[in-house]
Length: 401
Figure (cartoon, rainbow, N blue to C red):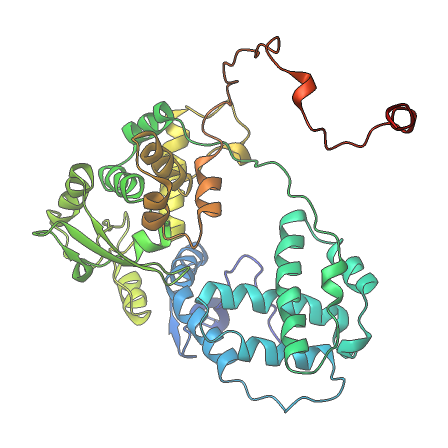
C-alpha cells in the first residue's frame, strides 16, 4: 500500500516507514538535494521539518540555476504558421531569457505557466483581447501587472518572429495598483528595533541602511569582495546584475569591522552562530554546498521581524502594515536625499536602472506639506496689449468688421 505524503513536511523532504526488530513501525525522513541525491535527516518529525526548511532556503539558488539552465537549453521545434500558445511560450522563455537574472527567469516562467493553463493548445493568432482580459482580471492588481507585462513581451516576440500579426495585450486595461500597504520606517522606529536586535542583526541592519543594498545581496556578500584597507566593497547585485563598488562611510566601515572581528570563521560578511548546531545539520548544510554560519534572506527577515515585535514600536499597525527589513533600503535612500545627495547618486548606489524606481523608494516617508505662496497682484496687467489666441465670439467679429 503506497504511503501518503505527510502534508506537514516541507518540499523535497520524503518519508519511509520500516518495521523494527520488535515489529513496531518507525518513520525515517530524507532530504532530496538538487542533484537528486537523498540524505537521511533522522526519524524526528519536528527536526526533519526544521532541517528541510533550512535546506530549502540554502539550496534555492542552486534550484533556480537549474530552472534557468533548463529553459535556456530546452529544445523546441522550429515554429511557423499559427502555432499553439504553449509552444510559443517555450520558445519565448528559451530565446528571451539569456540575459535575465535567475529570479526574472523564474517569474516569467510562472506567468507563462499560468497562461499556458488557460490557453495551452489554442493557436497564438486565435487568442483575442477579450480572452486575455478575462484571464488577467482573475488576478490581484500586482499579479495583473506582472502577468500583463510578460504576456506583452511574449506577443512582441511572436510578432518579431512572424508568428503573430498584432498584439492583443496592448488593448487590455492597465489595472491601477492599490495604495502601498506597508508603512515606511521612521528614524525612531529604526532605533527602537536596533536596541532590541542581537549584535549580528544590529550590524547587518547598519550595513543595509548605509549601503542601501537588497537583503539577497547582503546575505550573499563575501569577504573576497571586500577590501577593509581601502574601505571598499564590490557588489554584483543578484536581481539586476548591476556591478558597483561602494566606498564605505565611517558608519558602514564600523559595521563591517564588527563582522571582520568576529571569532567565527565564515566566508560570508553577514553571519551568525546558529542557536542549535548538530552533526546532522552540519552534514546536511555541507551537502548543500553552503556554510553553517551563513544567513539566508528569509532567516534575516525573520530575525528582524522578531526584534521589531519585541520593540513594540509598530504594534499599533496591522501586522501586514509593519515595515520589514527590506524597507531599511528605502529609509537609507530617503536619508541620503535628506543629507543632500543628488538623485543620480542615490540611483547609482541602489543599482536602479532609472530614477523612476529610485523616486518610488524616496516617497512615503514624509507627510506632504503645502508650499507657502502669496497670491499675485493683477492690477498692473495691460489687458489691451495681449494678442489672445482664443478666437473672438462671432458677434464681436461682425462689430469689428
